[in-house]
Image 1: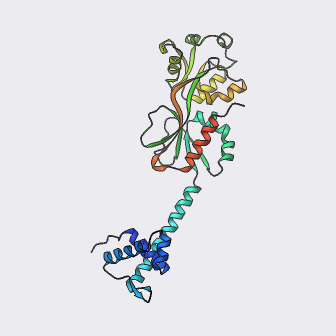
Image 2 (image 1 turned 30 degrees about the horizontal axis):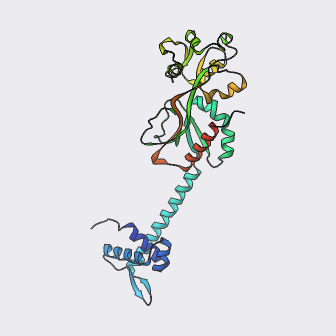
Length: 298
């Protein structure tokens, strides 16, 4: 004996008709025609091999088989409605988990977190920091905010927020500050440059923009993460290379200077999320981030 379920549309048509005791009202609720409901009821009876309704005057009356199926299908569809409502509500109530590097989190996102929460109060943003080990394909992460170069992964929906701009920065406390602050960019070839192992391409990429051979650069103290690199620059330990948004506050406060300005790289700051998990909250967040990145410095 086959245990295959009848077509779902036929069951829906039957459940609505039996609950409302009317083909016309069932058709109205399901947004289909009277004839479409009648055809689905016939499909269901043929599939089951039993009559579910008999004519009674101008209306319909459930047979014994129809009563059994009404009770079972009504209970099943009600349970489905409850579970779907719960899932929808839990999705709305769940925090939106955003991954990003520790340096981006500490130096750019956290100073703006109060404004973000005020502008998007329903987002319930939860932040997850990491460097190189965050992947929005894994459970527990809804999206990733990252500096990266296209082409973008085929399984990701990517919101491009801003072109990356990088440039050398140093503190007025740095011993070479007076000597370098009005010197051409080529003067950096003689410096032991602060660098980070997480972005080894940063200095060569900048040098190429200025027609400087990357082999002419001299690497000094290295740091595992960009955050530590920039703290070292603020402490006056040397010249570092940095994305502009991550040092904007230090530049305004005079803790760092950027005598040679910033130049664009092929990379973008972008918000990644899996296509399978498209979320309207991600679009709102992307719009807010893009607007925030375009704000003029105060």
